[in-house]
Length: 85
Image (cartoon, rainbow, N blue to C red; front, side, top):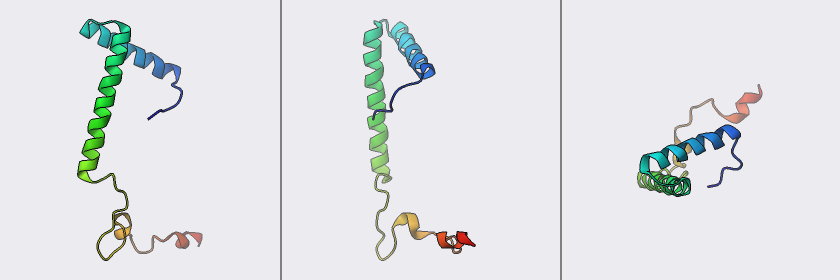
C-alpha cells in the first residue's frame, strides 16, 4: 500500500527509526532499512490475517432474510430525506 510522498517530518522520523534499529542490531543503515521494511510487512500481514479471521473484511455480509449487517439497526427518523426540513 503506497501512501504517497512523505513530508519532511515523516522522512526524518523514519530515518531515526532506521538509525536506532541499526545501532540496536549492529547492522548498516541499508540492512536496517530492509529489516524495518520486512518487519512492517510482517506486521501488516498479521493485521490482515486477524481482520480476516474476525470477519471484518466482508463489509456487507447478508443476513438470512434481512438487510446487510451495516443497515440492520437503523434508527427510525434517521432517514436522509428527513434532513431537508
